[in-house]
Image (cartoon, rainbow, N blue to C red; front, side, top):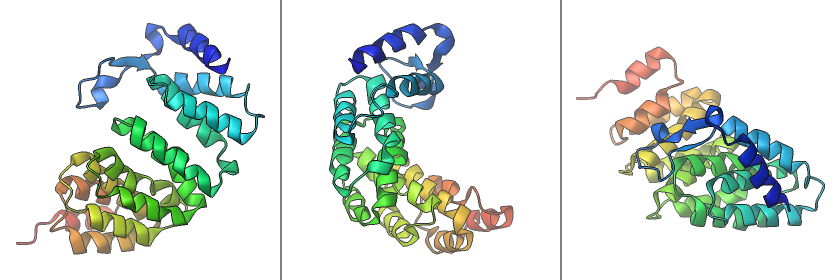
Length: 236
């Protein structure tokens, strides 16, 4: 019933003025480059979620699971959004479901960041012991799992949590050759610099010789100009 409602709402808003060219954000050639803007999708999401928001958590997550595994991009978006809306009801065991979505249904950086800054990140914030699970993604051949090992720590660090684990994860991913992974761990260092600028600067200075320039530039973006200049200076 709710999926039928979602389809009806998508059809109602599916018009050129609500489209965005997503190809501009991706190096990979997209099969369907045009799609509804995120603001429009969130409007649809919020409207439809009202119909199930009083349902038991188990039923909402089952609906999310159906949406995420449907193979449809918009439905995956709604599944991640709705799972985030019930974050106050999370239990430790919910991580298994979110991890399955990451492993099976994430195939681009947008979806990776959506789930990691959404259900997974908020779950790790509530249950910091789950960082032991996210670190297991670091040796994966799947670039999105390696990126997720970093990006899943953004919500915790914004709440001044897990700084040591951020540095440990960055250490593991330090010389990763994939630019999506480099940008991922550079991003967590940048976020950490908003709360712990001196510690991040010290980490960067200690590791900049091995750190790819892509990751380095991301990591120092929010530091004061003088420190950015010092970090970018080549040591001969």
